[in-house]
Length: 269
Image (cartoon, rainbow, N blue to C red; front, top):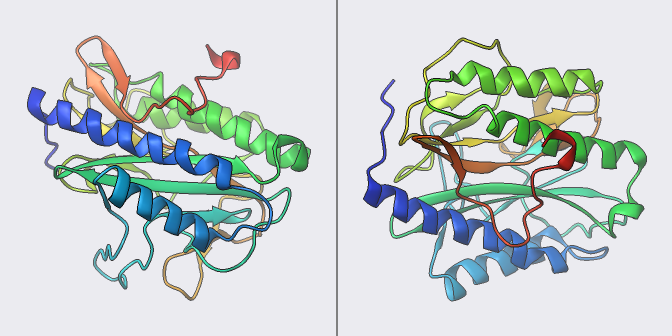
């Protein structure tokens, strides 16, 4: 495993890429409403990234080994879809929960973040859906709170797993956070479950994502025939939040925070 420690110049460029990524998620929020399609949301995000920000949407035509090229500019995962949902022409319905996952490339550097949206506003969703979205956000921030020099990657996963399971939810095991920089996916892998005090020691200059995927039912998942979309095997609801994190000499910095990003929940402050 080769973990790149970012230089001060790298970090400045990652701050810019991260900020722009968060701003895409801010921009798209007012368009998430009943009747809109995820394909329309994808086009809006694409045009904003390319025409306004001067970014490249990293998912478009992304093809890791064994995959066909991803055909859209963002991922949109609805209700029981866990991740990597492909935008399509199905209109969103009131009460749907939607994850939009955005990765920007600016000046050769990547910013990566995702956010949950409730279609029709918070009151439109079921109590379970609202609770799942909120607990998953808490899981993200509990994981972020473990990031400091000298801590271990296992501390992040342990904090997330403990909170998810204490609330009766489960953690998806097959997908994880990842190092990020000039490459979309770099070392290390950041698991969202595990044991405190285990794993790689966290060092200043590391940059990685934390992106827990939490299911209302069991953790088991399956892949749809499109080769990309991951769903819960029991068709229970799933939620995900993601930020890109820089390890600083004294702790951490969240690079993908933006004006519209939900703050750290007061419940875990």
